Amino acid sequence: RKDFSHAMGQLTIRKNSDNKVVVEVIGKPRRNKRALVGTIVAHINNMIIGVTKGFTYRLKIVYSHFPMTVKVKGNYVIIENFIGERAPRYAKILGNVKVTVEQDDIVVKGIDIEEVGQTAANIENATKVTSRDPRVFLDGIFIYHKEVGM
Figure 1 (cartoon, one colour):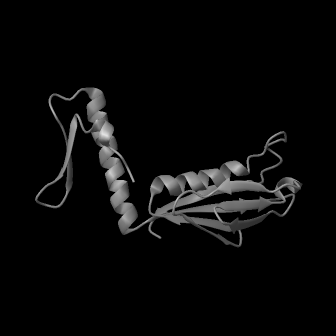
Figure 2 (cartoon, one colour):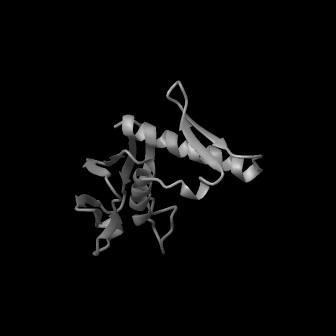
């Protein structure tokens, strides 16, 4: 659910005769108001695409040293045995996003592009390699494909 009330003093949102959403600026627009119009139009377009088609992000599980195990439990993705660590790592799943693990792929699907993207980013950030040489330890989970459609 989006709230555009912060911009409604300067903007009007309506549908025209072709059933297209039109966002107009009241008065003489300055540069930041024109930019705000483009941002709101992009958000509305993403909401329409999300409801009609949905969004899918695909992540690849990559390891060379220790085989990692990835599971989905509740609102978390659990990553076990990452670089041989004993403690599992957790990544939060936001909102109404569905996460499935298929062999070496993780598929993140949903209707809100921000929730889908943030969930994929949470999974990717949970497997950041620290205190090791990143040229040698290339292990992790990485986003490799973004698509419209579920």
